[in-house]
Length: 203
Image (cartoon, rainbow, N blue to C red; front, side, top):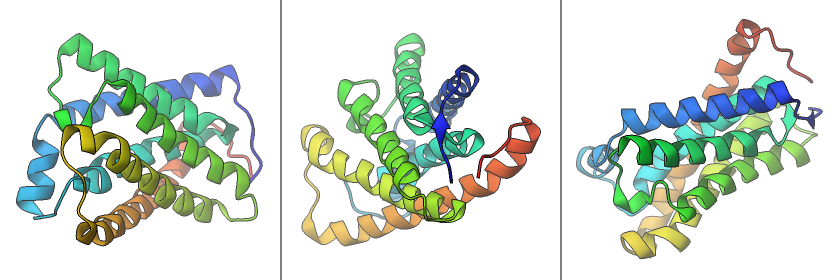
């Protein structure tokens, strides 16, 4: 897979995808819904189950779809940054209810989302020997794991609690599996979307 610098049109697409993804996420998962799902329904330990199972995979999907549509250098980071900034603006503008543990709209949140975008970017740039699907899977699994570890180290000790050692293998396993699934779905969706938008995927 050959990457080129993003054009103004591709940058605009990345910003649009990130902004739409942020709006969908905020209003689809209001405050408390993710915690209820992962802890009360699936009975998963925390903290981090919501990142591993819901937020991380959703963000991986959004960032990878944008990257696959353009094949441009920097597209993943552009989309991730647009997602984070849009979340922040929407939370401020509409006073959207979010889970305090996730610190949505804070500097740490911006850093976490940008780090996921950077992880996707690195895999897409350095893994040139792999197929497009292999790129997606590797980027999805690694990026979701990077996001979860960042939350464990930098965010949850401030907003929730430290993760217990016995819970790490389970949560990391869920994180990797969900990251892979999100990446696979992004790979499937990108093809018809690319045709619909009349964009050419660069090999």
